Length: 308
Ligand code: AMP
Ligand code: MG
Image 1: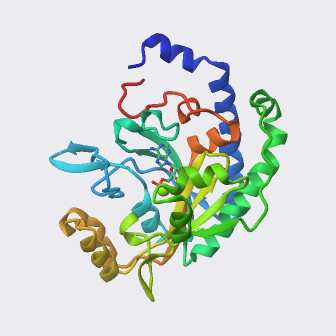
Image 2 (image 1 turned 90 degrees about the vertical axis):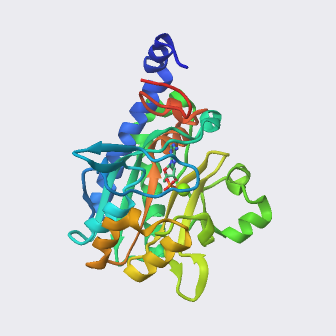
């Protein structure tokens, strides 16, 4: 457990201060970029009767109000999908709470509270949002050195805008070359970010859309940072028709009743969409070359610990 002295040392360290200053510039550039592309920033949802299932290992964070069960947001996937009924392009700096397994404490990549730049685009394809992400990273790495020169010098980091389009590797190729746990091995071999495409349905949640003509394969993607920094973002096209959503929930072995309100909403119609979410602490870690996401924000909470 961290002591108050440890917390104080981290909070006042030059490293964390510089990283937070870089991050503040990243947030500003991201806002400008996405607003310039016609996006509207929406406010985060922190509790709702439903959230991203992330069923593989994560505990449900629940609170009870007035006798109703609210879940604490693991991601805003369903709410950004629903917001597209009103606006064609939305983004949000969304706090996520995920009770990660305690052994991830030392991964350098996991916090139990983190923030995603989460976005969704009505009627977009996976390729549309991949192009958008590539343009964003190029814009960010072009503009950041001018506004965060002192901080980047402090970290001794030079990150050049990556070449576009980024390299793309199919999930089955990544598994063939690096094994089931390919993320880090692949990332260590990369000199520029690369896409992983077409995840199998077993490895993802029910909301990523299946290829209509390739059952079990998803129209989704991850972006992996180079130099061993691992996953940058996940995204894809979404299931939006009630029947397909129900089929996918059932196939996951999830009780339909636990998604009653989402399904009731989907029954009244959801737009087709694609989107992705970028972890802000991981992006800061990559830009600054930090050992751990713990140094990429104030009040970082590592799995299995009590932190302020
Ligand atoms: P996911 O939808 O699980 O892929 O999460 C979206 C993005 O958030 C990931 O690509 C990471 O950049 C980031 N992320 C996911 N889980 C964590 C975590 N436990 N701590 C910090 N960042 C995370
Ligand atoms: Mg992911």
